[in-house]
Length: 413
Image (cartoon, rainbow, N blue to C red; front, side, top):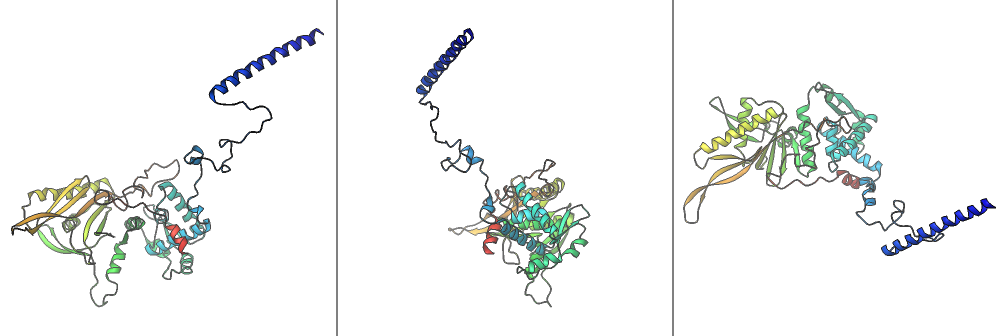
């Protein structure tokens, strides 16, 4: 009896405390505009409790929207169609240049993506083509990994309408150091990703001599200049490493992998002073871009151009005068004095802008970059920056952001 009565009293005190707590919560919720839910009452599920993708009332821009995975091109096209399009583009490019690197595939097929995403997709595509024996991997004497088109890859292309496809295995196996041509084709691919028509030196010479009489001497260059070497005047024909056909004139690309000697220095000096001249393909030379492999080579090129700036100050005025001035570090502007007749009959010389010269480093760090924690190289210089195919913001309108070429390829097929 005694035990039962004591337990009953204790339970009564606990029930009383619970009732007081409930009253206190009711008053607090009432003051804040809330309400208590009685036991057994059905509640409507809020958006915060709704599983991802089941609620249509999630406001855009919320944290849940930020966590949503965007599938990109795979939301519009099947992965099989994307793989087929990327293979067709990569193998057609390989047939064009005869040799390629993984970064070439990244620039060609995935220029709209951030660098790491583009490189990851390119590595996956290259591994698949190697596995299917469409391409073959080689190591150069400088330990560069390059790829060549196999006979099976050429057959694959011919089945899809690329009639001139040929294997490049034998040619790639004989290459000891194709670094120069690899950089040229990367710059050409970067320009084409921006929507600019571009061609390498070999492609340019083929175009210039297409349809010409085989009995006549072949065209060897785009521009003939006078150069001064050791006090002598010599006539030389120059051709670019790569040529970009932009609105308003041509862009002449030079890739300096080594230090220029006196002859090449004289040629560069004559090229810069020829800005504004008409080239043999009837275009006007408006820009000269010098890519340098190292800071030492870049310093030599800048010293040559700054020497032209000093000569411009000392040169007397006249109709033949060319002046060079550095408008920002590494970017130069070339003017020519042209004689003009004023409305009152007087004659005066006025400087007219002929074009620009841009000196910048080759992005040698990009092919060395990794996508894992071992990466010690920068991804600066990718297509989301104003760097490839050259720094244009200082001399003209900014580059257009690249669009995915795979979508257009898939739509055509």
